[in-house]
Every structure is written in structure tokens, then in C-alpha cells.
Image (cartoon, rainbow, N blue to C red; front, top):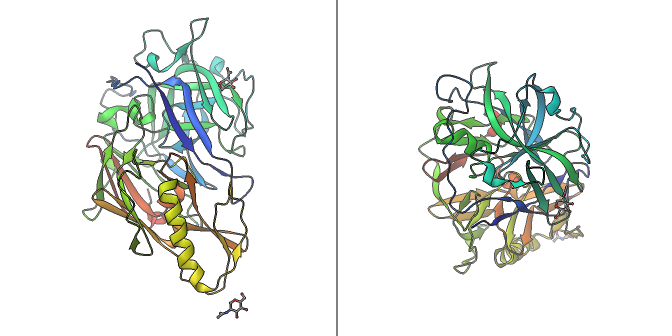
Length: 411
Ligand SMILES: *[C@@H]1O[C@H](CO)[C@@H](O)[C@H](O)[C@H]1NC(C)=O
Ligand SMILES: *[C@@H]1O[C@H](CO)[C@@H](O)[C@H](O)[C@H]1NC(C)=O
């Protein structure tokens, strides 16, 4: 039994500064995730000892999204990937390219790499791909709003910055997608060459590293205003957990490989909305590959109304907005105004305070609610994760988090 994975990514468009592009609905129609498929991968490290000479790539802000760099191939060349906890496949654009979005780095050329291999027919991850008429393993990730990325499944060496100063850690035999046909708009503005899938799928970077090398990982996203643009993605023993962190467990939903937590209720300015049970049937997805959070309508409408009600008490001037890119609620900035609304997400056994800085964003002379309504999806996007330390304890199926000044996340 196989079923496609569905997910949505809402990505702020880096070109139209401060604007959001249309929601992307990722329906990975041909990237199949078999039911309950669990894999153990042996030794994908290039060392004689188990992997955790931990990698520690920088997580760098690129407008509203975050990227990580990796080198690929032998000889190696650098590529920049969108850091995405909400998808599985690692992919980058490859030569020869039928259709590619613009990227500043040269396309990866499999012919120039001695470590490149098409995915072999006996590979443990082959069932995630379709087979073309010529026998190659192929993929086509398509997006409801029209975009699609397709190409070959392949195996390569990837290397990342290591946790020891100046070190690099190389991982051999990483399965990735060599995209040679991308259709539709891409938001990378030339800075990005692909996506680094980090969800719970065996296909993702975390899945391929395995529970031994990546029992947990952690990051802390600097704010939009912060002078510090890069922090670190940490794995295993490089992750420290404070006793004060909130804890909630990951829940599963059908065939999904997303990191999901149970969302129970939401407060606005300290007042609980008492959302009915069943408002979030599939929980809340942690998706750093989405620029902003979305709430399904049963929660979005009451949140929107409560925020409006709060702000309307302050004689602010409502401003028009483009609902598709800016959201549904904007006001003119007012000098000295401080009574912005706040929101609390009540997870099972934990709560996340979303302060004004993570709830509103400034667009020109307006400030706008940085949340979007969705028919069926609730996800915690990057904007609402700023200045929060998040620890994905994959091995114990728990999310831990706490407030932190991410600009202090130094090597
Ligand atoms: C991938 O799938 C999309 C949507 O189904 C389709 O429009 C596109 O042409 C496909 N790409 C390739 C290369 O087959
Ligand atoms: C409300 O705002 C309007 C225009 O923005 C201003 O003329 C008026 O004096 C304000 N009223 C109060 C009570 O602040």
C-alpha cells in the first residue's frame, strides 16, 4: 500500500520583499512513502567510527527562509539548500537541465563527479521512487500551485561543516534528487539550488543519517531584524537541552512523515479561545520551510477576530492588504504604539508564547498579522519560530523548546 504525501509550503517571496507568494501545495504524487516503512541504513559515514563527529552546518537567513550549505560530489562543489523540516527529499538542480530556475552557483554536473552514481536497483531507498521506461529511478514532486521538480534519483557524497572548528564532515552514499526539470516559479532569487528535506522520512537527511548519528537535532532562528544572519544546525551530542524547556510529544497522522505535535487550544492576549476538540485533527506540523504559520479555518477565524478586536480598541487605522501575500489584517504603523496582540499556542503539555515580534511584520508603513488561514493545514512556520530554541528529539519522539536569543548561538 502506497500513498502520496501531501504538504503545503508557504514561502515568502524574496524578490517581492516582504510579500508572500501563493501557498504552494506540495503533493508529492510520485514520491511515495510506503506505509510504516522503516529502514536501517548502515554506515553512510566515511569514517571507520560511527558518524557523530557531528555535522554543524550554518543555518542562514535568506529573507523569510533559511538555507544550509553543503558540498556535493568529487571534486566537491558548494550548493545552497532551503532548510526544510517539512519535506523528505534532498534535491539540487543538475546538468543537463531541461528547465531550471536561475541559480548563482553552477548546476551540479554528475559527469564531473567520480562519486556520483544513479540509484542502484538494489538500494534500500528505491521504493520511494518510480522507475522510468529506461529503468532509472525518477521522481516528480509536484505542487498544487503549478510548480514541479523532477529528475533522477542518485547517490553522492555530501559534506557539511563539522562541529569542530574549521572541520568538515563528509557523508558518503547520500540518496538525493538530481532535478533537471523544474517548472513554475521558484523563490530562491538565485541564492538557492535546491531543498534539504529534514522530515521523519527515511529519505530525508535526518532519516539517512540514522538514529545513531542524528538522535536529535536543534536550531534557533535569528529574527528578521537581527544583525546575526547565521546560527547553527546541531545534531546529537552537539545539542544541549535546558531543564526549563517545554516538552511535547510528536504524534503521527496516517502516512505523513512530518513532525507533528498536538495543538489543543490558542490564546490571544492571554485569553483562551476554547477551540472545540477536533479543531486540529492532524495536529500542527513543524515546518521551517514555510515562511509563516497557517491555521485551519476553525482556528484562524477566531484568532483573526480576537486580534482585530484587541487592536481595534486602540484607534489604529486599518490598512488594506493583499490577502494572498500579506495576510488578512494590516494597520498603519503608529509611532509609540506598543499594545500589539500576542498569541499562545497550547500544545499537549507545553505552550509556545508568540510575542508581537513573531506575530506581526512590518510592511512599509503598515504592520500585518503574519498568519494565514488554510482549509486543512495547521503548521508552525519559520516566522513564529524566531528566537526559540527547538530541539527535535527524534529518537524519543519529543519536541523540546524554549525562548532564546538566537543571535547568541555561536560556534
Ligand atoms: C511532473 O508533474 C507535473 C504535475 O503532475 C507535470 O505538470 C510535469 O510536467 C511533470 N514533469 C515531468 C518532467 O514529467
Ligand atoms: C484617533 O485617530 C485619529 C486619526 O488617526 C485622530 O484624529 C484622533 O484624534 C484619534 N483619537 C484619539 C482619541 O486618539
